[in-house]
Length: 449
Image (cartoon, rainbow, N blue to C red; front, side, top):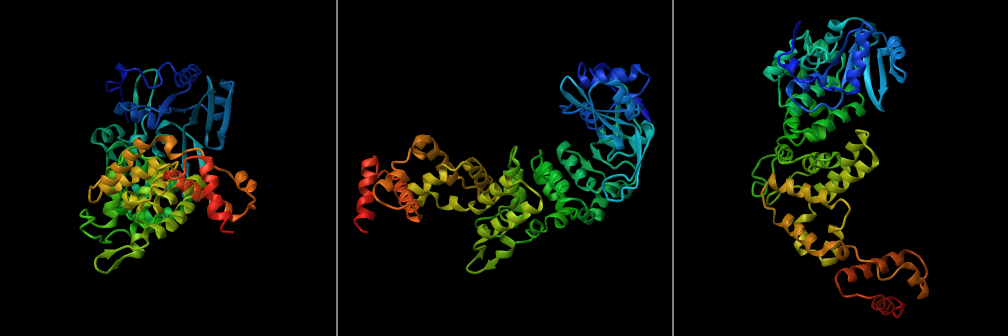
């Protein structure tokens, strides 16, 4: 074990002046050890922004509950108590050792122990560090500080044992590598490949959460490559892994196969939302099953099939209906930009006024940058949006269903046809007043009847 400030003594501890420090002080005053633990210590030593501070202590859960007036026993059986201070939740966990892990996630046996045993149960060395916030001492039982300096992701103990205990660590290793810009230590990396198929024993909800963190994180393109190279992609998203080696017409896609194209989209992205990240991943998922060679390589109908496949994949990942619908819409219409300059004015305006038009534009921009590089249709749409403005794209309707009833028409499917046709002519400028619209309906519907 190393105990060293390494300059940390000269800096305020993370959470200085916060509730986390107050909790540690109270525990220390009662004679218990109380350390900041895990990611907060890692990020503090790296000079990164710290989101949450977890506290590890030698105090038993009942003691923690007795020392603080407002607590929640969210995971008391595992020694975890949430202390509420100044309307903020702080997770306080008793030092423990775990064993069993029969379900590949939860320990079947938990014993309260000491700081050393607690550090040994953690996933990666860089996440097993403790910090005494009152003295600035960094407590390191697993060589975590050395791995921070070497920028390495390494399991605590033997990879086969650590990954077997909680199989989600297979994905977490890749997430931390991308999040921090670290390499994965060779033995750990080799065991990711060896254990990739074990992810089938993990719930889709847990896989989804880690996958989204990778795809919306700072280096999703690298994350995609690491997941493919280690066999993880073939385990959790075989439809995406199938993109590897699927050739594309070089005149449109000089970058290479479909998987490389998708990886390049991510390499050119920035701060993607969950919906847009998933649409980026799945926009060409329909290409492998529609691959054909005619006068050139073709993927006829891949957007429509891809939308169906994307919907199934998103539902498999237990995503919300809003996200599923958003991803499906983006995948289904990602080729419509090819025709924007030839669209009827009403069709273009309807396309540009969609609630998610910014996501459509961004997916198209990334799609172009990762292939032929031609952004002319993207620029055309952006210019049109500025020129047209909200009132032109969404004008108040000239007539309503009530107006049609007054003309003697009966409600039914014909109403939608009439109202949509009138709106098309309004968007194209051939009808500009209610009177003109009503006269047009009389001429084209009432008189003909």
